[in-house]
Length: 147
Image (cartoon, rainbow, N blue to C red):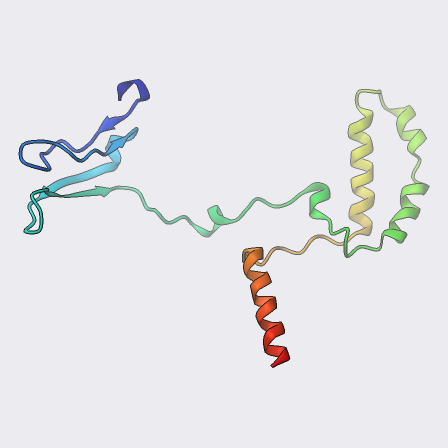
């Protein structure tokens, strides 16, 4: 156990004089109260461990990080024909001549991203529902509409 930096926190007998139940952790200070009580239903003792951590997370920790870059743009809802003109009008040769070959890909990507951000809508935030459930909901609505 020490090889993996784990500590056994149950140190009281759980059946007879033996410790049969194992609770390994790399943070033994989180187990604040450990008890083993007799029960009428078994010759094993009931192990109760109180932990000093909260299993719930705040809403902020559940949210995914904001989407940035090209992934933040909705190419499906955007008018791609209107996007072609600013891309073709941009001075790509001037950008290439004004930057080093090593930094050109980064400058090219930034310029293209800026054009796309100016002419495409941002993606809508997801509903938070799994897509599978959304598909089931759609099928239910179609069935109800037919009835």
